Structures are given as C-alpha cells and as structure tokens.
Length: 90
Image (cartoon, rainbow, N blue to C red; front, side):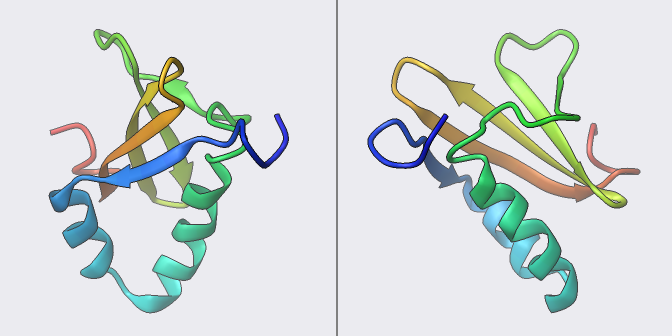
C-alpha cells in the first residue's frame, strides 16, 4: 500500500500514550517509527494476530510489544498498549 489517501489513521488510547511517554527516549525513538509505519503497512512482516481476538494485532520491537486493533473499513489503527513483552498480554 502506498502513502496518501489509502493511509491508515493512527489513534492512541490514553493508557498507550502514557505507556509510551513513560519509556526511555532511546526506546521511544525505536518504537515510534514502527508505529508510524503502520499507516502504510498495517500488517507488516512479523506482525501477529492475537489468539481469541477478532481484530487485535501486535508488532515486536525488541523486548517491547505494540498491541493495536485494526479497522479496515474506516482505515483506522487504535494503539492499545506499548509494553514490555513480560507484561504485554496481561
């Protein structure tokens, strides 16, 4: 998919925004570009659909996981959580 009118809109839940803000700046600089890349490729290589969920996916960034829901009808991605892998699925 190319950028432009087909690009997805990214929204952050309040909790995901707080989780991202609490991280070290160097870590945010690694994670945020991966989140931004979801605009043009909402199912990047290595992403996984969460078991037992209709439209929740995750991407891996080192030891961190970005959990998001995907709505292809409205071209919207809702970032649900940005957590260390040990706490990502709680």
